[in-house]
Image (cartoon, rainbow, N blue to C red; front, side, top):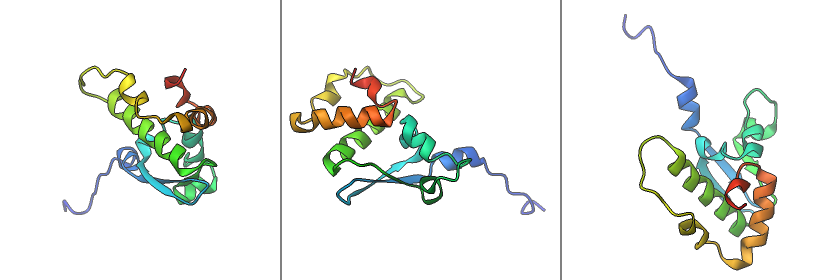
Length: 123
């Protein structure tokens, strides 16, 4: 009888899903859904109540080159880790900004503006 009922917390299960983020030059990056939804734009794209093809395929195209998309994914992971539950040692924001090459800085600002919510860090 214990096998008759299976209880799953689908909300938590969905947060552990992986989402593919693709760049304009064909590179793909896999991030957890909980990381991707830090961006307001990606959160809307992946909303299950919508009929967006991104939500159905769990794939979000970003019209930026791979070097920029990689830094966006890296920042979203950085932010998710340090805003998550549990105590973390204080991390200086400069730790992340030092890893941004000057040649992608402007493109990264434009991408962050488009992705909503990611821009908080850069202002």
